[in-house]
Image (cartoon, rainbow, N blue to C red; front, side, top):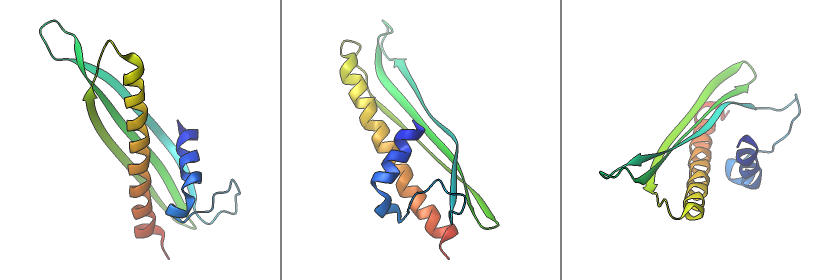
Length: 119
């Protein structure tokens, strides 16, 4: 999942105004400390058939520039109708939500970088 997130950042590096490198001489260093999506379904009727899926997303990063270090945390949660008869459809919904989480995290990261690291 980290690779997917980094690939999205690379694809939209103009949006974040970043040039990515693995170099030790980078001006700003971003380290992903924790990155997860928790998936679960909930029983909503008396027969205990799952009708609601939930995704909880969280990313924690350490961002450093010179002697300045800050932690960036972004979390989000989304519920969606879960159809036990259409597993592939559910997977597509979850993939779309993951992409939405990545976009939201990038938006918040952009604001965070501008607030704390824009010299």
